[in-house]
Structures are given as C-alpha cells and as structure tokens.
Image (cartoon, rainbow, N blue to C red; front, side):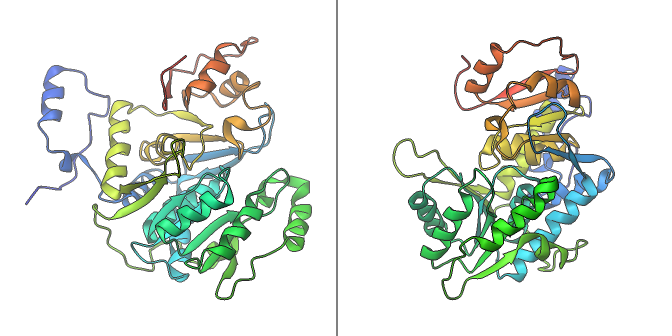
Length: 360
C-alpha cells in the first residue's frame, strides 16, 4: 500500500542544491501531495490565512476602475456553499455541472464547488449553441450555471436555448453581474425580469446568489469523501479540427499540477488573470495553483484580455496592483511587446507564464 502521508511538495524556498533535488526526486509522487482532492487542497490554503486576499476583481480595464476583494476565508465559504447548493439540486458524484460564464469571482465558486459536489464542465461561451448543447449532451450535465442578461453579452440567450433542448439539465442557476455594476445594478435586474426564460417542463431556474445564501459554509452537506481517482472536471478542446473533444481531469490530476506549480514558484505572488476560466491555463495557473500557493489573483474584467482597455492599460495595471507575474498566450505577448510603458513602474514584475503555442 503506498504511503500517502502528506509532506511539503518542495522546500519552502525552492530546491537549492543537488541533495535537495535528489531527495525530492526519490520521494514517491503520491507522498508529495498534501491533499487528495481539489476541495481539500483549497480548504488547506484557505484556513492557513483566511484574512489574506485571494481575489481582486476589476470590472473594467481602466487604471482607476473599482475593485472588489475576496479573502481566503470568504472564498472557501462560497465554494462550500456552491457545492451544497449543487448537492441540494441533485448533483451527485460523477454528474456534471456545465458552466457558461465569463471571469467573475462566482466562476471560481461554481467551478470548485461543482468539483466538490460532482464534476465541473466549463464551456467557452463564444461557442455556438449547437456546440454547447453537444458538450452538455456528451457529459450528461444535470445543471447549468449561466450569466444573467447583460449588455454586450449573448450568454443568456444561448443558455435559454441550451436549457430548452438538453433534457438532462434539471436546474439552471443564474449568476447576476449586478454586484459589480454600481449604479447600473437596477437596470440589470430589470433586464433579467424582462428577458425570455426557458419553459421546458422539469427545469428549475434558481438565482445563484440566493442559493448560496441559503447554504451552510462550514461543511459539505453531502458528507462526501473524495477519492483522488474520481473525475473532477471536463475541459473541452478548441474544436479546431471538428467538434470540441472532452478532456477528463481527476482530482489527483489537478492537485498534482497545482502542487507542481507551487513547487516551481513557492514565493508569494500577485498574479494577473486575463485568460478565461474555461481554459485549463486560466483555471489552474490563475485558479487552483494560485490559491494553493496563497497568491493574490487579480481578475482583469469578465472578458479578461479581451476586455475593453485591458491591454492598452496593462502596464498601468501591473503598477497599480504590484503584480509579480501573469499568464497569457502568444497573441497577448505579441501585443504587449509593442505597448509603450509610458513610465509605468514594473519593478514588481518577476516573470510570466505562457501556454498554447510558441512565443512570437
């Protein structure tokens, strides 16, 4: 029987000598994981320093945009509430929850909460309705979490169409952007009230914020003990060679990757998040791995790097938040390479992560 007793994944200051590297490489990988599930890994990080800031969300790319902070204690509480809301809605281990969301704090709550209750299935909201429905059908998702009607967003219209045509869906959770809309919050509520709703028999429509408010935050009501080999997420491919394919993640997959990234970079970070959370890079590097490391994640608008004014003001945002790192794809790096610094203080920035393709 393998020894799964937890040990630190790497020396706190990183691997500094050949002896430390040898000892690390000779340790079975199972013993390098402090947790066997994504929920337990998150819980350990959150209870370590619950008052520490986990997330800062900025709704626009303006250098002086308002920010909304979430500490680690609140992050754990909201993820736990989300898991309990999904459990109450009938989501069981092995059943999928489709997420049709932009980058919001609620996206993290839903994604990690779905993994604690069943399986998270984040989907690119820019896909057409047929592709989204095909992913829902392929995963057999029983719940859908979608953004409420919002200006310049067609997510709600797609969610209504998908909910109407996919019979496996039993619950539609509605995420309102109103908490981040300031004076426009009332107009967003009126927009939702006037918007068409799916009318299929057997489908419940539930406000996500109200569902979370009704749930306890100190325990999983399911009492679930998660085995590391259980599925935790379905991430779809880009669909560049046909229909999107479903890539299966287990809890051990994701906890291992999170711990590996933490071992590579054990120092505290302020990381800018501009990649979508339906993408593995966004969900892991600026999600679970960052939380495992106790990092502060700055979410740059619901649209990420596509958000208005994000790239033109990027160096000012680095300066404002004293960012130490960010994760991006080659097209973003190409745009940044031609962006003047205009005197922005970039002394906090140490390095960046890149994925998807070779650098330009």
